[in-house]
Length: 350
Image 1 (cartoon, helix red, strand yellow):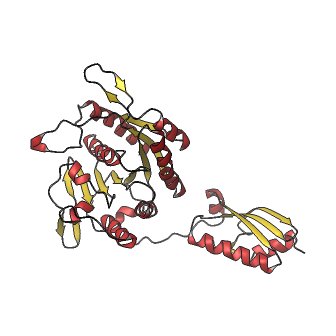
Image 2: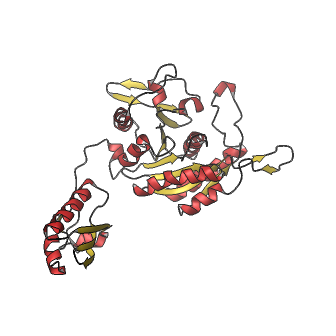
């Protein structure tokens, strides 16, 4: 017959890999319920969501079934920082990756994402980057939308990065250092690589590009929650996230999935940008809500964040001598909205 004493003795043989102590010794057994041959356990670990957690999960099931349990219900929680410190703390791990991805990097990563394409995510990325640079910040942007790269064209970039030895020097435009898949394909050719190859290319964007000191690195992610977005989320030591949606309820609903991925990978959502929020007549000043209203607020409410700004339908003033078809100037009415958004981002990240 299964007893609490017998179950705890079995669980005492299972170690928290990060602390090298048994899950009983760490105080990790949060709840224990026994009903006949059925056992339910809630276990707190030093780190969750890891490969080691999967190993511990299997080991717990095996040891309890070895003691006669017919079924094992498991839930996981995380030990808090105070508990971990009392137990000796987590071992310090050596870091062998690119300096930009070091856990103690001073660069703030801001991933700009959306649930679906066509909501103006890249336009927001480009204008956030250029506006932050205009406000005196050192900024880079990675066009991580591998299949739908558009940042170079949006910023009016025609040159290519310089390569010196094994280092790639990004193109600089409007004070922003830019790297994009578009620089490495010929004649707008489609990218047909598979996931692992794309992951390697993204890693090269961090490891082999000479970024110098950056205050902000903006990442224009592909829409949705596919392999490339997941690679970026797991690659970064820490990241802030901005979600772009239109006011339409469907766009906001789909964007919530991308927000859920950010939360699961422990990234902080700093806000929502509602793009194509309305059309303002230059003649009457009246606003027409072409795509409806409320999508940004609903998304922000669901993700427990705020709406950073609402961008109306419009286009920048085109300068043929300094062509950049998607970059708004500081004095343009929409440029002023981006300035307000960028200042809010700075406030939330410093």
